[in-house]
Amino acid sequence: SSRGSQSSSALSISSVGVRGAGLAELGGGGAGMQSRGGGKPPPGQPKPVKKLGAATKLQGSAPTVFRKMFERNDLPVSVSHEGTQNGVRWKGPLDSYDEAELLHLCPIFFDGLREP
Image (cartoon, rainbow, N blue to C red; front, side, top):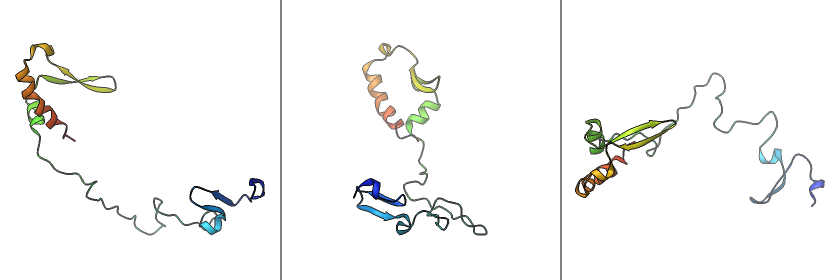
């Protein structure tokens, strides 16, 4: 059928296979439409409590080695608060650190990636 012959209350969604069904048949439109979640509960009823799933619960974890060393100021880096972005600034020239010291710091920095 052509688009001009469809009524204004018809829905034509070919990607999901619904074609030409009226809004009343799909449960939409009109003043009697019920809310399907996300809306306010009717007056006099308590608000439903959302339960958090295991993936959204805050997980308590012990402080990492990175956090301990950073708070004690044992790392040769500091956080640079410039504008709207935070960055990492080395406390001295990077060339002044030998390879052994950088290899020692590498696992500590990777441990810091686990920080929330």
